Length: 120
Length: 168
Image (cartoon, rainbow over all chains, first blue to last red; front, side, top):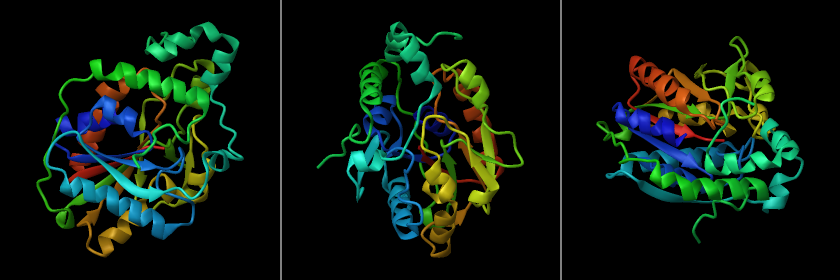
């Protein structure tokens, strides 16, 4: 996502990113970033919580309006109402790369280092 | 207290992200910057999500190829008309729990929330069309040299003044 944001900015479109992993997005280097302490898959909040989602979006867009220099980073004040264990409960996400690395754990350093094989 | 980027991640993902954070700064150059040329209250805003949202009339993001080649992720994008609701779309993303966005699309692509903020005058206008990519991109070349420039062309053609990016 940070990569897309950099291209937008380079072509004259101002932008702001939300991020649940702001450490990573900051490392990529983006113009305007809002960190949020929410779990993956639910960046704007809980399903059905229109008021909560609206306030997250409002705060995100406020960063767009307020930022004056590149690499602006703002931490949004919203707190997820569940513990990490509770937030993960019932989620059964098992991407193909996880199965591949379980079968071929010697490939894991490639994922760590970004030395991505051309094709499996 | 500062946000803990790793709090909600499982152990394996946490280790991978930490390794990427250590590696990334050497890869990036100066941070590109486009100034806001309009006040937020006058600006047309578009959303870009990474949740792999595709209209049911459009081809889904290719999950079969990713299953054959797990290092690959579909690098294309989809346009989503602003009046779409969860019944009009599907989420094609093998790395997130898609149930939440399928239950309430605004969890991952807050198009209705943006319209509400436009109605109250907080932003000038919500774009007619929003966009989604699929965020799992280990080989980001196509995303960078084809998809992102195509998104720029779409946004400019649609009269969009600024974009808000929502990862999942």
